[in-house]
Amino acid sequence: MLLEERDRFPVNKVTFYDNNAERQEIVAKACEIYFHENAPEVEFSYTTDPETAFTGTDFVLAHIRVGLYAMRELDEKIPLKYGCVGQETCGAGGIAYGMRSIGGVIEILDYMEKYSPNAWMLNYSNPAAIVAEACRVLRPNSRIINICDMPIDLMDKMSRMCGIKDRRELQYSYYGLNHFGWWSKIYDKEGNDLMPQIKEHMAKNGYLDGIEHEAGKEQHVEESWIHTFGKAKDVYAVDPETIPNTYLKYYLYPDYVVETSDPNYTRANEVMDGREKKVFGACRDIIAKGTAKDGGFEPDVHANYIVDLACALAENTLERFLLIVPNDGAVPNFDPTAMVEVPCIVGSNGFEKICQGPIPQFQKGLMEQQVSVEKLVVQAWVEGSYQKLWQALTLSKTIPSASVAKQILDELIEANKDFWPELK
Ligand code: G6P
Ligand code: MN
Image (cartoon, rainbow, N blue to C red):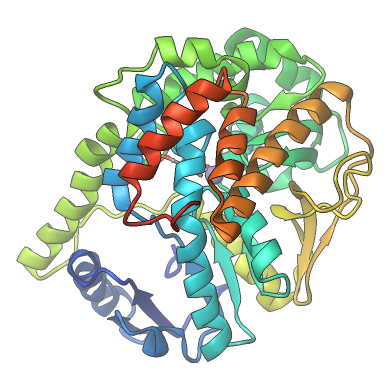
């Protein structure tokens, strides 16, 4: 994607950084061949040395997964054993992942600030809500912008519902937390209201549009995702005034989610057996053949959005992006210190939030509960507090009681002992 977008975003140097040399070697070696064949003028390298990686850079595009898929699998399977939602970013699984991710993201943020203090970090690392709150608390002045591709993919779908080619033409209002938000207004570029059309579609089909399996799409195409897009119909029914993020299904229909989960084969297994094998297989193939011609790499929405955002910062385009930022009144009837997901105008001096006005009681109630979970996780990490993490789990809408929360917590502590700070 970076190479495809070179006309508007002229990269001259790309460096891969990973602290896992063995895993990096496969992807980076294949990309080296790809760069050599497709963009010999771009200086490409890869390293496990932070100083080399982070020196002389303008943008750090960060996607890390502390504990890899093996730990995602446990995040999903442990809560399910106790009859609770097992998901990588929602409920107990998201809390466990948050406790692993905070240290990892802060580590690379510190490298960036040490070696390239004027750079921006565009962060996709999950769970973004908890990571964003941790950065607000621990590194309040850092140049990190936390983002998510889910709303982007959903806006692609909305554009298709309305016969609009490019999602970037949509003008929208949106509020919430990451993986926990709602669209309240959607217009086309002439200012026509698109909500009636989108609502009609949502009431009938959720986000399903019949072209889920279209060639060229790589992300969000497997059966489990298609289920989620269909279930959005029931999520929408709870508040037909707004258009919901798909992730709300874990909070509004946790019983259904648990019933339809296979405790022995979760999304992590699907990904390890699917995407992981495919990506690493394609890379090994390129390395074996010594060429990336017909290598089958496809850019997806992740990359697309991140390039748009980097362009806005580099070239002061003042485009609208949905970012995870400190509330500070953007949602006036909600905690000013919360990290909320709202539209922002982005230019070379950073972002400016667009005030969303007061939100309805239903959303406010849900968000207050969820933001408290996220804040308690960060406090638990900072203070090494067992008590606060137990409270976080107890407060999660996906967990029925303090006793279940405690059982899950004790098992998560054991599973995460190589990653979490010690809790007292
Ligand atoms: C969406 C979310 C991401 C998440 C991803 C997981 O795109 O916005 O935050 O990482 O789904 O997808 P996967 O295919 O790994 O289940
Ligand atoms: Mn996301």
